[in-house]
Length: 306
Ligand code: UD2
Image (tube, rainbow, N blue to C red; front, side, top):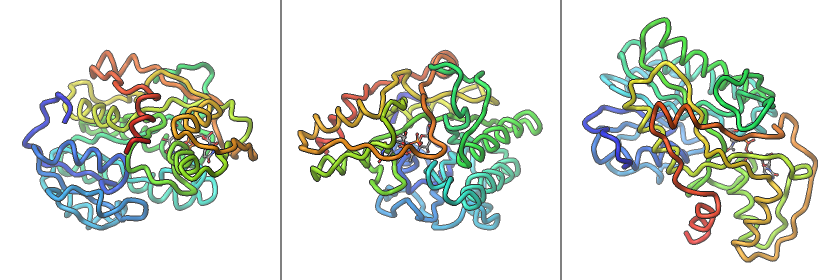
């Protein structure tokens, strides 16, 4: 648990059996009453801490949401389709879960007068005009995923402005860490890690010059806890590190840390892929006291030791 006074609260975490949500649950469960809603489409039951109440269900289902959010003080809304690539292949499903699910949560939060901390995304910016980019960068999403996160991010702000609800959007950059599973639609670090562990080829999409800002899940948990207690609500914060890494460099780093014999191979670039992404985190630093603590090299070393 980060050094934030977040105790004695009744908390709902949607997507709490997933990668980010389950780390958040771990951090909160000792000092709070935590309920997790997850449909287990990508999350896993074993990620859920024993002390949490677990409900398997759909975030779009109003009845289910009403039950799990009864008397709740705080909602961390992590449930979504997390893959940009998957959203390009199946935009309707992404829209249903990410967009409609967020509205269901916001409506219930309005009913309960609960604070909402929403997992927004750097994908809402699309291709930025400059990097590092701050929150005043115009939004111009290039994928269905980015479009749905963008409208959800704006609904979150609108619920503050229209109804006085305490809401915050955290715009995650590329989150990595333990429990991120490797599959076709997973984050690049978990995919490269598995490839390197097997000495398989490491598959870089395109020329590998595209960049990302990789932020460790423990830092993302800290940002969420700070957002849960801040007075500075009704706005959005970038959650990254300010460090920009090319995908080619990432592949080389991972091959070296794993001491793998993997060849690095290049495929076609991904449709809807962003060329550069790196956060200016000044707003989160100033308003929330957020400071990333895990450098990419250290985070990768720890992942390979696990
Ligand atoms: C990630 C998150 C997304 C959102 C966004 C914010 C995941 C799965 N997606 O989208 O939820 O928060 O960040 O910016 O965590 N790549 C390869 N080879 C592979 C797989 C990926 O080269 O085998 C490349 C890919 O083309 C892209 C980069 O790695 O340029 C990152 O891809 P990603 O799927 O990990 O994440 P991204 O940025 O699309």
